Image 1 (spheres, rainbow, N blue to C red):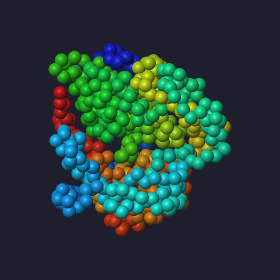
Image 2 (image 1 turned 90 degrees about the horizontal axis):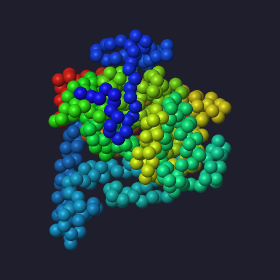
Image 3 (image 1 turned 120 degrees about the vertical axis):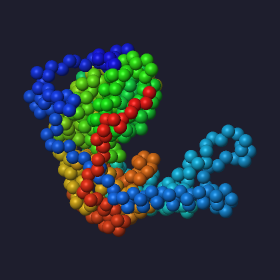
Length: 551
């Protein structure tokens, strides 16, 4: 049983759903899902078929990948034995002898992976740069004399490295130029920081101007901005749901969503990534059976998803999720950290990408750290929702307000995208990003690499699998002045290590061709072209009987 009104008891009411009139909206039923055919006379769904690829690796690749981790684990135990015997120097943190009888602060096995596998390839992460993260940046060269336990800088700067790792989707995070004059003026007038919370002396006219502009950009009633993107999720979700509420979370949601859900005290259940059968089963069971033991109706049911998933490059199936949330009277919280500014004809995110009404999403969340070249985040939606958060949000009560120059940078970037600066350059960048994304993905597919995600997503994961190839891939590309981000366990499944490319509107065709040429050579050198053009069953269309809910 679920509260058909959406629940007005737990931590404040989001708002009640309005009853849908199928005859007026042109609704039709198919496979148990409510599909709205028209809205305001316009097609409600994305006109093109949604194309996402999650190709399976050949069997021998998976075998060698697990063998590599197995051999690394065996040698790790051998090296731990040598360290404990004093034969090999131990560089890891250890308990002091005089504290041996104390309760240990950590267990040695907990950082076994860090000591023996990650440490061998640690030089591929945390590389310091010394320039703006534009399409080209400068990297500080460093070397290690003790197998990556410590590093020292050589004093040499690697100039003009092609940046394929930053979330600088629209190329707005660049060196100072005359267009940033307003940011400089705000810095001189307001200073660097506010030194107060929004509830005290920390609400400035710049914050109000930014919030009005965000609401206008997203085409919603109101918005509220916060100084930190991660905290926008983790500190606001507990204000929206609590004990007696149910959160249905995508299995690949970001850590900030996971933390916020756990802090809320609500019951959390996970559905398979972008899998509507899995989500609908959880929704149906939640409505039928209610809360465990008591069988009372859930106070709220909140579906939490992302717009673009940063590790998979996939785009949320928003039309079907909206249909499900309306059918079962649930709420929808969408994190558009990677999709706002980067997808949609004018960069307004996944709602615009699918041609849907933003009012269909109850809580719109996003960050300014990617497309806007700044920092912070926002929550947007109905005015009563935002007004509730102004009073109850932990970020509003305890966190320092957004820096005024940061707010001005976001205002400048958003006006640029919206065309309020009197030019069409912002719209051109959004379109250029889409062109670059399609071109880059198409060429990688033609070369035979396995890449994940939606063909329109600017986040492009290229599967490497084996840990040795992860290190070789990043090191060789840096020698060719190409900076990439490689990702492995625990950020990904153990056998799905990958390189994650982030395409930018600032990348020229020559830059992309240079990268693609290097990737083609690296693919042959390291034997990375695993694709057999066979789409896997992921996200799997599981049989409903395979989903069991634990109380």
